[in-house]
Length: 53
Ligand SMILES: [Zn+2]
Image 1 (cartoon, helix red, strand yellow):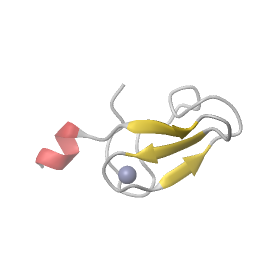
Image 2 (cartoon, protein in one colour):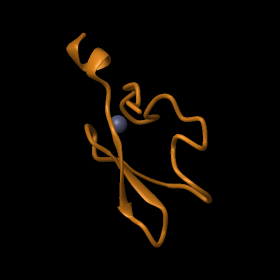
Image 3 (tube, helix red, strand yellow):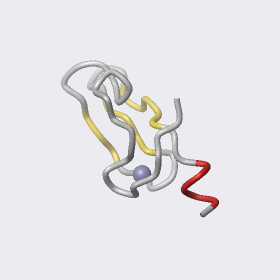
Image 4 (cartoon, rainbow, N blue to C red):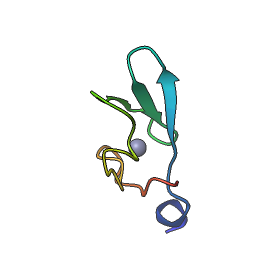
């Protein structure tokens, strides 16, 4: 329950290729444009944690 509340952060790990990494499950995600916020992501699809803004 602590995990759900604390959520995760999507960190930009590759500026050139627009790749983000979940701070909790370390899954990598590549966006065609912008980041998770601009693409209306609210949860990490891999671990299901809420993405903190
Ligand atoms: Zn995750």
